Image (cartoon, rainbow, N blue to C red; front, top):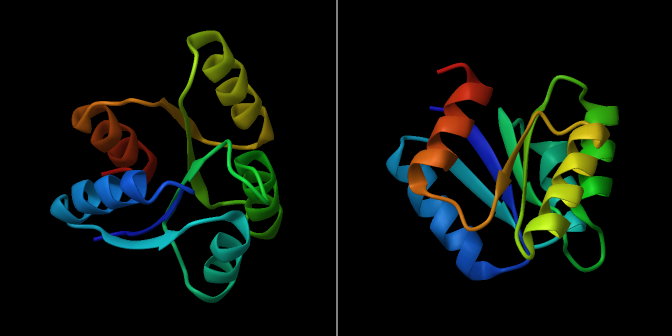
Length: 122
C-alpha cells in the first residue's frame, strides 16, 4: 500500500480519484488547493502526489516545482483537462517543471492505475 496525495480544486475529481485509488489498495489524502497540499506534504510522507495543473491560489506547476525542490525523489503525476491543444501545453510544461508523468482529463480508470503503478514501480 502506498500513500498518495491527491490535489484538485474540484471535489468531484478528488472523490473519484480517492475511490479508485483506495480500491486499488492505496492510502489516499486529499487537498483542495496548493497551500493545503504543501501543508500536508511537509508533515506526512507520501509515495506519490497527483495534482491538477489549473487551480486557484496556487497552480499545479508551482506545487510541482516546490515539492521537487523540497523532496527531489517525490514522484508526481500531473493532470489537466480542457481543450486538447491547451492541455498538451500545460502537461508539457508540467513535465519540464518536474512531473514524472502526465494524465489528460478525462481519463479511464485503467489509464490512471497504469500511470500510478508505473510511478510506484508496482
